[in-house]
Image (cartoon, rainbow, N blue to C red; front, side, top):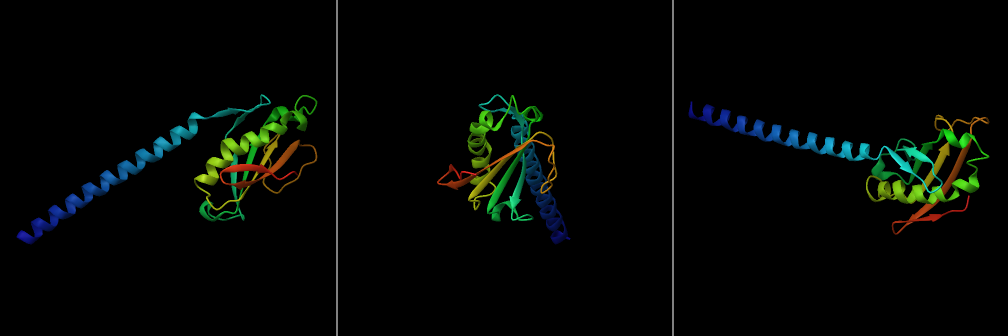
Length: 153
């Protein structure tokens, strides 16, 4: 009978430790989500206001930790007006976005990634699809020593 009580106590203590561990993980996730949500909009040097990007790790289907390339896909309806937001006006935004979002990802979730591709489209478009009536701009950067180096597309 003594063994049963001791076993029940150990199980109870173990369950308490598991609950505390689960609660601490949940709090960490909520804090992480809160900090990500805190940056709902990023204003670029050109004046565009962008929500957090869709992030794709490549090769497609790769886990972030083994990805060799990261795609950051932003949507900005204002770039449909190419008179106002042509590539000349947006050119500096690409390096800025690589530095602001790309480097955070390559130093965190995707440490093996050596390339970041930044795209801005006037409307959401499924990855890999083309649409001639949609304005899209792309630029690519090599990542070396936590620096975005323009590839010159």
